Length: 451
Image (cartoon, rainbow, N blue to C red; front, side):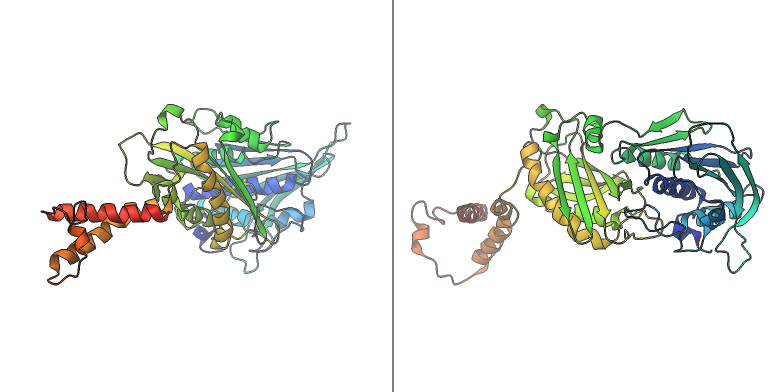
């Protein structure tokens, strides 16, 4: 397989993020069939200082021993049987790309996929897998080593799988760790309460990094608790579209009522989900249907202009129009979830980092309902502007300039003499500024009467 960068394995930084996502999301698919489940993702130093190891374990259904070699199957093939619920893994290429990248960047002895799995905890199967890079048909992995062992003592039956993979150490390991922490933190807002996820980073140079995503609360209550607010402070809408569902929540947390007297610059922190799985921020974030739909909203009606932000975690920014006083920038959070229920999710690329534009129309319709709610929730921050007021604010000065120019440059005008009477439009005019000012007032007054 060439061009691994197309699959998210272009360099050690992106490869670490993509490999963790691939391993974790495969585990998440494995536990969906059970009423409850647990997944642990652990990052640790490998014995070789040039590499780190990803360890992903789950309490899912386990893998049959004769299916393990198919974990690294060909592109667009998959070991997963069709199910009645959405799956995270779509292309059947993630583990193969991760293993190929490991083999191309590390010594052969270290670059293998180590799999331990059990169906019922009485028999365990262990295998070390690699891909034959010289084979024209490498749909199945090569099993370098394998073993069986069993447990005969009486115990409570369980199933599950553990997968280990080594990758090269990124030059700046903090960047992928930051992306993964963000990924697992935002995952906690959508996970079912019966599922427990733990992300642990044990790499040298980091304080103990441990994120627990399990909670007895439902996802919405978790979201409200995180930002110390109530449902009444949410702008919320959900919409059924053609083959998918859009759910959107907007909240402006940590804003004191006394600070809301007038508009200020707002950073939009965007949480994007597909089938409840967060999409990691990437350089191509602005090409995502979620982001483009949010930027294209009618922010003018609320007195703002939406521009590109300065961070992949806050990709958009709202700037007051006209610009107000220099006040501290505040934040507003948008959580937008797209769930498919007919067919598979459409992504912009095999990295599954952004959704295709097919979803744009449905997301836009949902966002219209959310924006309509913001002025009632935060009247000091979002002021529903009358359309005629916007016209008078933006276009009346242009019309006044044009009419003033016509008056000044015309040699022959047919004017009603009433305009020169006391209180008329041209009464006691002795400068261009007076003409312009009176024309502007007249145009604004006419527009306001029409509204």
